[in-house]
Image 1 (tube, rainbow, N blue to C red):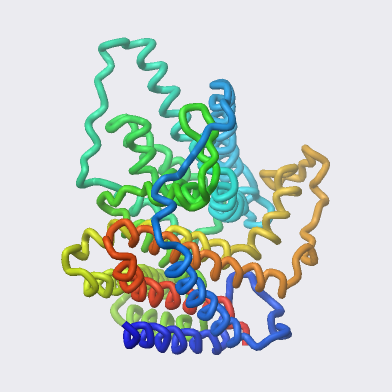
Image 2: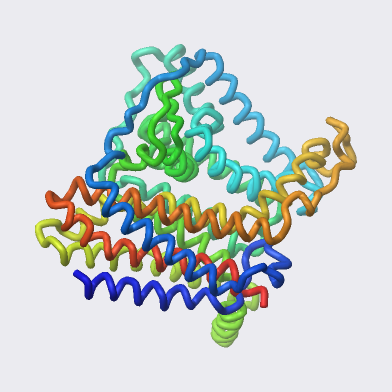
Amino acid sequence: MRQRLGLVLLCGAALALLGAPDALAHGIVGREDLPIPRWLFGWAATAVLVVSFVALAVLWPTARLERSGERPVLRTPRVLEILCGLIGVALLVLVVWAGLDGTQSTTANIVPTFVYVLFWVGIPVLSLLFGDVFRAFNPWRAIGRAAGWLGRRVAGDRLPEPLPYPDRLGRWPAVVGLLAFAWVELVYAQRDDPSTLAVLALAYAAVQLVGMALYGVEAWTRRGDAFGVYFRLYASLSPLHWRDGQLFVRRPLSGATELQPIAGTLALLAVAIGTTTFDGLSENPFWTSTAQDIQGVLEDVGLSGARGLEVAYTLGMVGVVLLCGLLFWLGVLGMRSVDRRHGSQELAGRFAHSLIPIAFAYVLAHYFSLLAYQGQATAYLASDPLGKGWDIFGTATATIDYTVVSANGIWYVQVGALVLGHVAGLVLAHDRALVIYDDPRRATRSQYWMLAVMVAFTSLGLWLLSAANG
């Protein structure tokens, strides 16, 4: 046991040292004058995880999160859900209208900021704080439910029942959808073009409506809708839970234990972590040099420079996603060495939920500066969403205040998010181990490997945040 723990600590120390080189984080500037050396963050983060691991082993002898202990605190009127759905549909219409009819300037049109800042980054934060708010505002769910209600009114019993959702399909449609969005955001050359984003929004809505027509609104929303599934992952960490027109309060993190390990679940989490990781890596000098080399090879076989670069970035993104999945799988294989009665597939499914707070930590750490700064652009973009010189709310002259959060303040938020996210992952993994293994000591031994996984993910995140600015 001591040898294994020593090995984990040695790996953690080595990984922490990887945080010493210089790298680039999304939207981060001016971190050259940090009050303490950067490498110290890596060591401090590793120490926090190790101390947390020891504290869990000593102070957390029985599972506490498998039962949420939720209690109702509020009942919401049905009309509120209808109103939220209408707002969601209105926002979808705004995105399509602004994208197709507005100026095609990335900064003057509201669509890029709405999609990449308010939607992609803002909703995960709201989900953590307030539960699954996207479900209420989900525009395609609202349209699907309205179409179903109208169909029952018109056709009555003649309306065919939806098909049973295939178990083998699982969350794979959501995996494909999430990977496709990440490809558009990180690889596609026209990713900032408002009209392109509007067309893609219409295409995605059409796919969702087809899925709902085949398998039913709720079944498809919970498994096939990439954004519905993705945002629900982060909502499972929230102490607030909305269900059947009621608001419940529960233990934080406890909702994650209810994640069902159906087909595609681990792949979804690997995509969530891996694509955000690649976003940070994509501006790293090492990667940009490698991508140019790949681009040169592809140009030699006949691809254009732009296409070659897209292919290179696609390969890089997929490679990082596979690497993140492999890293977790190595932790699973290590756990299996503690007790061979549990297979790798079983352990991977039962511990997959421990990756949810890591995925959120990566999102918050990587995009916090984008949300803090570019999110302020909503004030003037809301007054002139099409970029035609309007001033609907009198805020068209508003500007972005880059002093609202200092560069060092953003850095501390990012580091704190990474550390707390990985500690939360350790808590979830330890709590589940106490359920799976009949001996608390065996449960603790099994988590040496998950500690190594958490240290690896933390060190990778710190390296991406700190490495490219030097």
